[in-house]
Image (tube, rainbow, N blue to C red; front, side, top):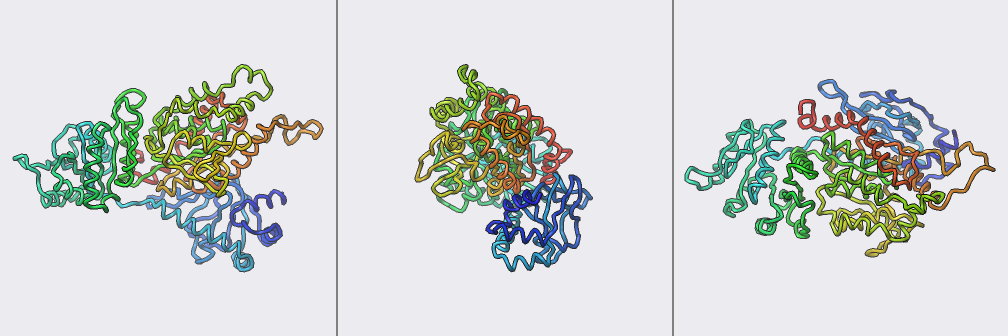
Length: 612
């Protein structure tokens, strides 16, 4: 146990830069404590006289709401700490800490902590860094955001108007909405107050009249201004000035004209960019939006909504509308998909379960296999599509099936023969990340800078190839002064990227959390004389598994909830078992659904509460 504890300590962020003697000295002067699942470690208002370093397991921090319920604030896992703020301020502990998974912690008395922080500068630096990161995450994921009072929607045609009706109706379930429109349309619920922006003679009302109506609607929480882009430019500019948020809505057919109008508005008042957004409205035969490099310089961000009412793309209409509703409510739900070779096929089952539950994801971040499955979902294709096509495309031929360890040789050939690119291009062509319906961030490792490369734009297939590029099996990809390899080396579960992108509810999917204690035919009980040397592919995959397993605990710290499908019994090269792994991911997510809904309800009870 002592050797195991020392090994866990070496991996703890608090001990970076300390040698084994220094770590051992600190352990000897502290107390190692074990906790079972369900135990309450610390309670709200408890006077702390110790600092706790979590070396194993996972804890949940909760606060009691005015109604008496426990609201989850965040999770604490291996590598994190409890009580640092109390150490510096002397304040009582503000949360209740409950053990989610059996935990081992190092309890250091304040007296010992003060002494060792003074003696070991690296320990002091690491603790201050952890406290700083905690404050940063609290600021970036602030739970209560100010709602925009006046929201303008500038339209291109009647198709785009219909989408606003759905947004208004969805918000009306948890807010009091009023609509000022330049033409009355049937898309609005009769319960939503509706007034015209036109006088009886057809002329437009002026800005003071608009302000007066907004003032009269004292009990209205949010006002929609719905106008055509052909609205007189001077009056349009005044409405934009009056608005807190502006959505310019356009189909691809008339996007050039809409962007032209947008450009004129931006040139007149560049500061409007920060409150202006673009909404692409796609027809039934359109899966992605056109590439408009200029758009990012004109608007804060863009959204994609499909018009399809039936067929595979119909779910994208509802999801697209929901993402705009989330944005207006200050909600951003992020999903991090880990690396894990073929085990990443379990992600597809997770995504299917979330789809069926009606949980809309606003952003995805992926590493390696998480990028492979993430591009499928973010492009609008269904998880079942991914299972079907990956199973078909990645099934070893008959010659490999006859060979021992044939799956490994097949994967090796896939890399050495540069066969990933043509396989993916037939589905994704030259699509770029910024054209996909759902924003996606990808993680790759640059060997030259020894750091992470984060892609949010650029060729989607290239982003996959970079992030799944395994060493030994393939050479580094040379691009723009970088040597690019698998993203799992630097960030296997990129929850932190989602926090930095503004997500305030983050779900991490870690297919590497569970590791089978078996490599080839070797187990912990195999006698030395009967042990067999695994092949090069099996050895490499195992090394990546071990690394991913340990890095996953680091990535999990920024998550509100972790889903960990146990696919450890399946060979990480067996892509052909995608259906089985997808089912495991689906069933694991269903078991986590109550916790997901609880977390979302804590974030916004109006949108996600029982009556929503």
